Figure 1 (cartoon, one colour):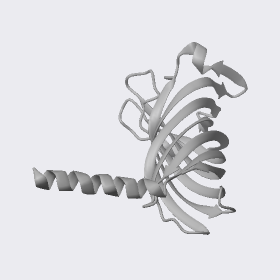
Figure 2 (cartoon, one colour; figure 1 turned 180 degrees about the vertical axis):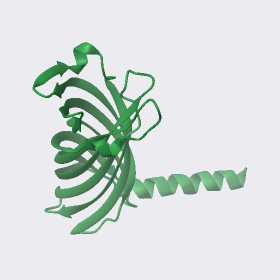
Figure 3 (cartoon, helix red, strand yellow; figure 1 turned 180 degrees about the horizontal axis):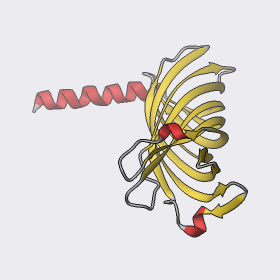
Figure 4 (cartoon, helix red, strand yellow; figure 1 turned 30 degrees about the vertical axis):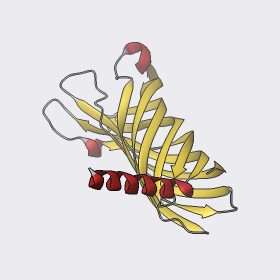
Length: 209
């Protein structure tokens, strides 16, 4: 019993020590994305190479909690554009999608006075707000037709670096990879998922310890 009490006291002490230098921050960022789809047809053939990526954008606001030991916990909300293009049987296809996203993740930051590199892994959930598929010059409303599932979820791995502009203001840059895990197809014989490479620039505004 005494040993268990000692362990609990040490854990509590470590928790207090870690939180003593903890810092909360509001984050605001914007991203440039190269988005596309991973697609498998009903014969289990991967057709990823048939899709071409498109440049899109996203923006978001979030909260980040960083302990003195470098543990990072982050959450956020934002808007993300997605889609792809494809040429098939001399026809031009394109998809224009917009999602509302929620993210929650954790990682590690090497804290220094000027430059602090970090890496985080986040899970995300996205809900399709609007979507259009264009075949040549004709547009089809994906949401109204129900031709694509509206829920999307997956993982985002984000290595980045933060530069300290002042005690309260940080500027950060991230290069992230978004890997969708949800099947977007309503056809049970097919599978598709969002993928994207993202370059993000943002501001971190600290407001407390």
